[in-house]
Amino acid sequence: MKNRQVRKFLAISLAAAMATGSMSTTAFAASGYLDPNASIEREKANAEISQYAATQGMVLMENKDQALPISQEKGTKVALYGNGVYNTIKGGTGSGNVNVREEGNILVKQGFEDAGYDIVNNHKYDGEETSFLEDRIAEYNQELKKYEGQLNFNYVHNEPVYGDTEKGLADVEAAAKETDTAIYVLARTSGEGKDRAIDKGDYYLSDAEKANLTLLGQKFEHVIVVLNVGGIVDTNFFNGLGGYTKGDEYNRDKIEGLDALFLMSQAGMNEGHALVQVLNGTYNPSGKLTDTWAIDYKDYPASATISNNDGNSLEEFYQDDIFVGYRYFDTFGKKVAYEFGYGLSYTDFEIHTDSVEADEDQIKVSATVTNTGTADGKEVVEVYFSAPDGELDKPYQELAGYKKVEVEAGKSQKVEITFDTDDMASYDEKKEAYVMEAGDYTIRVGNSSRNNAEAAKISLDTEVVTEYCDNELGLTKESMEAGSYDAKYVMEDSATAVDLLDSASEDFGTKVDITADGVSADHKDLSLKSQDFPNAETHTYGNGEITAYVSENDENSDSYAYAQSEDKKEGEKLEKVTTSDSYTLVDVVNGKMVLSTFS
Image (cartoon, rainbow, N blue to C red; front, top):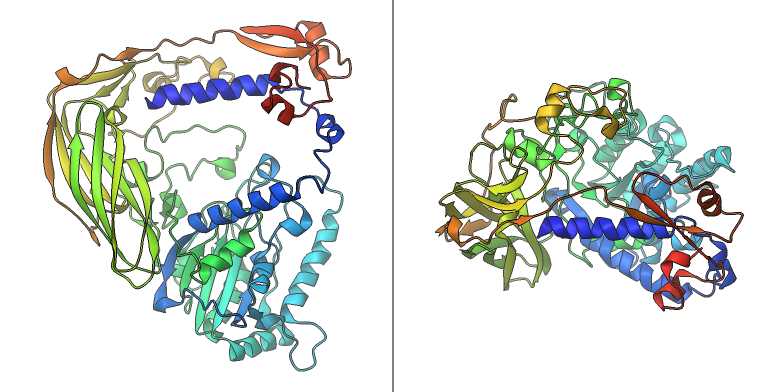
């Protein structure tokens, strides 16, 4: 059962956090764990895993005129532009940041160099002392000096307008004579201490970025835009779906001459190598979007209030209720730029659902994936369900399961996807239970939330309660909308009435456009009887008692001071233990000591 698994994970995580609250890095140093030479092989192995994972998650969003893949041949000429070429962002800020050796962070420029590409805008033209890229890197390094000594910053360089100087324009024109392909890497950073800004230079293109992409679109036959971002950015500059005209204040008007849009995301320490391997087809792109990319920022239901948009970044009221992400866009009939689950490939696939089987325990979907193109590749088969209309609000559809399958060109592969029948239940706050209401449950199979085919209707005769729970913290939809909940649970001075999205909200139930390109199904009509379902399990919850392990011998630790004060919290039991800083977490794994005494 999904809920039990989540609770078990949270319990284990909380216990581990309590036990290691006073962990010291001296243990690692004492054992030689931080010795640079001791972990080289492990780091190499982990880097390879990271790199492969990155290749599997990158998403091809647009590919006009077969601009991608680029040639794998060594010596192939390319031109690299954008701050992400030499200021590649591997991850978020704050707790989302990971420190690696300087040589272990593979930037995009190094990725192309290591793969043997000839980066033409790194050439020195007409007796120049420095190349175009050298100029940009020098500017970047000069700006970095302003931040020397600062802790945990993640600077993203703002490039100048290339055409504003005679040398910059001449270098772009010279590069365009050597290669027909320009790759522009747009970088953004975000995370703890670095909230997104709905402004130019973050969610939207900066003026310089727009000018530079416009210039590249005019000079090069193919322009590939790579998004080195940790979150969504506006894509009107590429697809023009918003219909903005030239001179738009947020640079949302379409730029002509751009051919491919590619989401590399922030892909870790070896992202430069991983990017090249996907752009040149060593790995066929097979990633899918885990977010819905709206046409306009205002299309997001929380756009007016999130972060600083309402002048208060410290307090958020989540008004989406169950309509989060694609559940909102699909339920309220919003057109989107790129839907949840979307992602292209260098080849083409067909997905046919052969059968759907259902009983009170499990739903099983069997499908055939056929590669109709000329390149080997991987496709993700996605299964969605729609629950029947009833007393409870429900989204139009929800993802129930998915599986990635590798298929050679011209070949087919069978795939099976299963999920628990009670995954289709909805939570009823009045009954404090997960409930499957009577009616028809629709199963859809495809390769995105907006491209799937109806494969089955499963009729349930009467309502089934699948799990009894408790409403915790006194927070129910009724109390939140009335502002009658206990404010102490949400760290407020007083309760605030919150208007939540529901079936009474504007545009609820607006028909969404679902295509079925390359997907089909042998439709099945199935039925389930409530009497066949097992008795619902009952779970009661309480804050309970948590044991916090504190040191009784390390007088310099916060843990020791906490133990002496006996300032324990409600429901917290303090247990004093003798700690040692001569061990490492490896010793805990090997059973030489227990986690509770690790310092």
